[in-house]
Length: 268
Image (tube, rainbow, N blue to C red; front, side, top):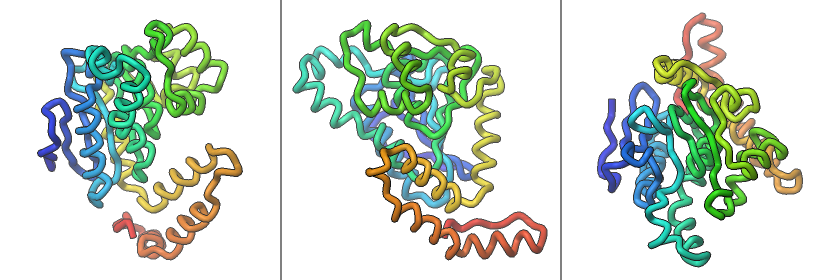
């Protein structure tokens, strides 16, 4: 297991083991509310995972067992987000973690236990997959704070649950239990809290065992499909397909199949 240090804050923990990179939001006394420093520290961790070929899957989770991320740290609002100009600057600095998750070409999994609120829900929606415990609770309380949810955040939620359900979540600011979140497509799987980490670990191990270039191609193509047709990068879609067929891994996959053994992927 590798521990990643020098990330600039004790409220972001990171480690890598068996091909899985773990990014842990460690602010349990505030239900893992994201401060600006935490957002920037998390982005530095993602940068390390991006460059580490041994990391095939990234799991994001919260410490303490009671919250994934409960949103932005509201205690910073008066000092750093008191008006539109300050909010824009704050968003520019703190928003890197969201774009970093979306732009990561490796699969990402949000492991959610407890509260997943506001910007925390946006972060989970930015991930490729969401696994949660039965006691998880979801909400976007923007309407109770007179906050406008960012365009990208709204888009990610709409992509998961559709416009009508997204309006319900945003207009009402109500809380959704895990079962409802599953029924509307907000999460992929709900399991007992005691089984959550093992479930995520086992699933991530399955992805680690699959061809990384194939998973990367699938992620990139699906992301392009979610864009307006005029904005899609069809050349990218064709290129990642060619890269798979021209790769050492494709030759290894064929050879391993013929030899009835597990392939050894190199990611190239």
